[in-house]
Length: 166
Image 1 (tube, helix red, strand yellow):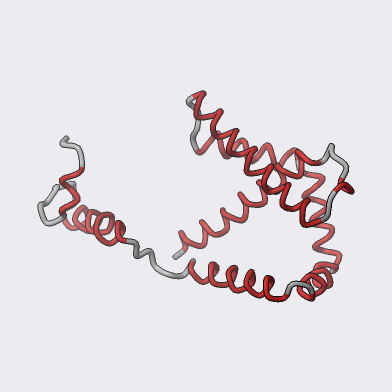
Image 2: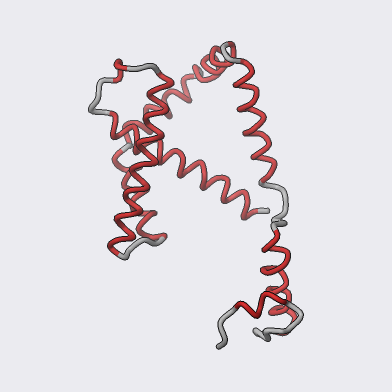
C-alpha cells in the first residue's frame, strides 16, 4: 500500500513538472492571446511534448534511464523557481478557496465528474495489486523463491517455462 501512495505522489510531482516545462515554453509568448483554459491546455501539451522528445533523444543517445529523467525533471524545477514561488504565494494567499468556488459555479456537471474521478483514483491507491500477471506470475514466483530460498523453476508455476534457461 505504501508503494501505491508513493506512485500517487510521484504522479503529481511529474504532472507538475510537465506543467512547469510547458509554462516555461509559453513564457515568451504573450499570455493575453488566449483564454485561461487554452493556456492550461497548451501548457500541458507542450510539457508532455517536451518530456516525450527529451526521452526520445535520451534513448537515441543510449542514456534513457532513471537518473537522466530525474536530472531532466530537476532542471525543469530549477529553471521554474520563479513560477513555483508564485504558486506558493498564491496558495498561501487564501484566494484558492474563492477561485475553486467560482470555478465550480460554471459547468457543474463536468466539475462533479472530475471530482469523482480524482477521489476514486485516490482510493484506488489503497486497493491491493490484483492484476492477472501479478496473481499468476509475480506473486507465485516470489512465494516460491521465499519458500525455497533460491530460484527453483518449479513446474507448479507455468510461467517459468517462458523464462530463459540459465
